[in-house]
Structure formats: structure tokens, C-alpha cells
Amino acid sequence: AAALLDIVMRLYAPVPAPSLTYLVYLLGLGAPHLRAESRAALKAAKARYAHAEVEGVTWYWPADENPASARHRPDGELRLLAPFDPIVWDRRRFALLWNWEYRFEAYTPAPKRRFGHYALPMLWGEQVLGWANLRVEDGALKSQLGFATERPRSADFKAALAAELARLREFL
Image (tube, rainbow, N blue to C red; front, top):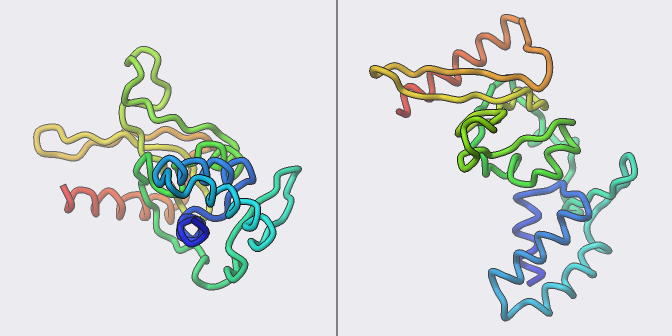
């Protein structure tokens, strides 16, 4: 259970304390034979993972991970993320990090949607600025963008967005 939790933490860290507890709960569902061991692993993890309190929220990450390392330095790429990407999956953490609430609305009736049927969060550098809805119409990729913050007007943003849309066109 502790080894599984370590794997999950390497994927999702940093996580706020309530999300760490929820991840352990999910591990117990996925491996019910490890449920009791998972609860013990949670108690031990809170002592062995690095942690810090930020604005009243305790965050955890693997002790040997250095958030200031070059590995974590953002690049200039813009990425459209899947709704279940590790950056997006934990909606609690997402709202704490980017100060807006993303929702997956594929099963929401169209009139009640705020973001769109399959909105892809838009990550640029260290910020998730908004979302994009994409569709192919007459063989051409069409995009509709929404922003939780002010839309960047810089040439760097425009170039990064064009590059990501070109990657998606090629993929499709």
C-alpha cells in the first residue's frame, strides 16, 4: 500500500491534505485487500512526505522531490489538457492552484453548460488560463476558447496557441 501511494504521489503531487486522504480511499477501492494497510500508509505518509502549509492548506509531495529543480521549470509551450489529466483530475487542487473551478460537462445538459461539451483546460507556463472546445468541421479543426483570466494578447501566447492547434490538427 505504501509503495502504491508513493507511485500515486509521484504522479499527482503536490496534493492538499484532503486530496491525499481521498487518494488513499481510492487505493482502498482499487485494492480492497490493502484497505487497512492503506490507512496505515496514510498516517506514515503524512510524517515522511515533505509538506508545507500555504494559506491554511497543508500540501504534500515526495520528500526527495525538489520543486525548484529544472525538471519542474515550465516551458513556453501551450498545452490543451484532457479533463482527466493529472493536472486537472483533482478539482479541489485545481481550484486552489488556479483560483477558478473547472468542470467536465460532457454529461451536463447543453443549456446548463458553462465551459462546453468537452472543454480542454489550457495550460500555458504555470497558469491554466481557460479552456478550449475543439471540433472538426468539413475536415478543418475549429476551436472555441474561453478564459478564466484575461486573454493574453502577446505574440508569444498567439504563437504557442497556434503551435498546439497545429499539433492537434496533425494528430487528428
